[in-house]
Amino acid sequence: MKQAKRVVLGVTGSIAAFKAAEIAGALVRAGACVHVVMTREAEEFVTPLTMQTLSRNKVYRGMFDMPESWDVEHVSLADEADLVLVAPATANVIGKLASGICDDFLGCIVTATKAPVLLAPAMNDGMYRHPITQENIAKLKKIGYAFIGPREGRLACGRDGVGRMCEPQEIVAEALRLLNKKR
Image (cartoon, rainbow, N blue to C red; front, side, top):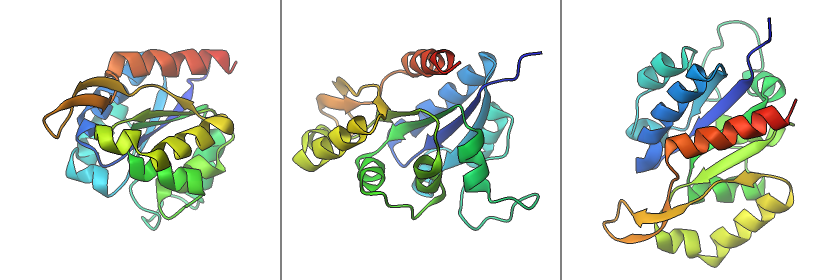
């Protein structure tokens, strides 16, 4: 029997976090083993219980949560991942990753993994177009991180512009493409 591909799904603090629930469910239906890592900010938008129910796995939230067994979980998740997907990827998280800042569970996993990393940006158009954000995205692309989106559309601030996270089915299709490419 073929072993399921392991996806670490990072969920960060954006209104687009509600789409991560649909992404988790779709990846599970496609046969992936999904491990969700939520930032504290993400929990303001979607609950760990929702993500646990849809992923069918424990949700990782903090660096110092007690593990169920002895394990350096941020290292083991990074090592076992076939793909790390961050959806939504805020300007804050993109900046931290580009700077090598590992002050939370998600940053440690992304920095420690050898798996492909796919980021789905979601933010205000001004934040997305800001030269620092663009420089951070270019820096991450240079070291091999993949990006999907963002798209133009209605933003949480009420105006239309670039910064809207791609739709879940589009993100899942790209994640599955990267997983199949990794064989």
